[in-house]
Length: 69
Image (cartoon, rainbow, N blue to C red; front, side, top):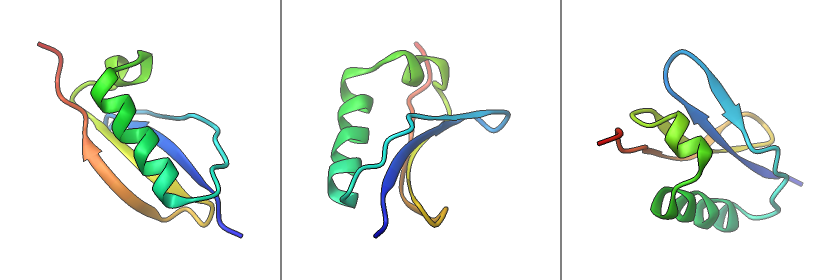
């Protein structure tokens, strides 16, 4: 069974949350929530990208993280 995690990247480095979410929809919802509300990862990777990646390593969803103002 596939699981899903949330990744942050800026071209030079990346981090992931370490989640093993059971549905793609839940992972996407959490990622969109992080984009909307902000957190330390969205601040650190501002101008980069937030992605949902499945346990096979395939990116299934991705959006840019707005640059800091």
